[in-house]
Length: 383
Ligand SMILES: [Mg+2]
Image (cartoon, rainbow, N blue to C red; front, side, top):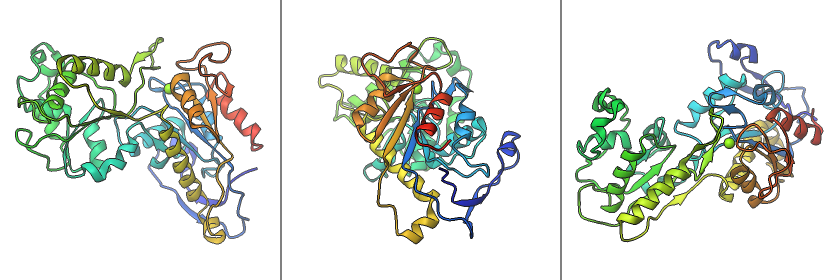
């Protein structure tokens, strides 16, 4: 069973692989093709430890993902990437993944840990906020529509003595911080000396833990004005709560959840009232509900012609596959989300066991993502 429904003028995979100039897809209905059946399943792939290890593809991921496209480059199986990682806008991540995997991935197919922060726009759109983490956290929030955003890197430069260890950090001393960060300001921002920070968003893994914990304690204890008297704690959001994740190093690395524990432990020791925060990301069932909604939209985009003629999609997915490497995060999340989620555990990342995981057993255990896709397509009868 194939789900091709249209002919798309799209650059070929070969062209993408050669890095030729961008030609974006232009989809139109094929006058003679009958409308294809609506896919009854979809797939969500974790990225780190499944698709890539460090920066390189692993487990035959380019071949696996290319099987989800028709020969003309159109998407034939609805899928998305569901990662707790982030730090860059979804559009940029989609472009990077497209180059890496040799297919055309749309920003809609990239759901990062911080993607749901978009839903908080109503509350914080015009409030001063601070964005934390590696990459370009302020740009991420600005692209979501938040108007008064500063990265913690930029924010800290306005308080010259806020980090007493800065003179001992070569990477701080060697760069002209003010100039560098000033160039990243996207919107007219706010006066850090009088405008209280209303929200802190940890977008991705923080880089300079000692400085960030110090500055965040200052912001959070004072009601958003470092150096001022104690005040009500501004809202605090984490994009994920991963204690560990698999990167290029053979053993797991400490993730955002580890940073959260460090911040919370210190904050609760130096402050009278405990830290209040909200963590997003897998294994939160909300993330899986959101992924299902996004997959439904992707199917709708794939089947625009059919939508118009048949009056919309009434039914839902019979199966949604979560392909991940982390039992505690990916498999536990899919299990908690319940039907129609079906969990597939790979051995290319955090999990390396011979049999199934004892505490969070998956519905299926495979060696690689390539094997996962092979099993799914065979099970669904669309090889
Ligand atoms: Mg992973």
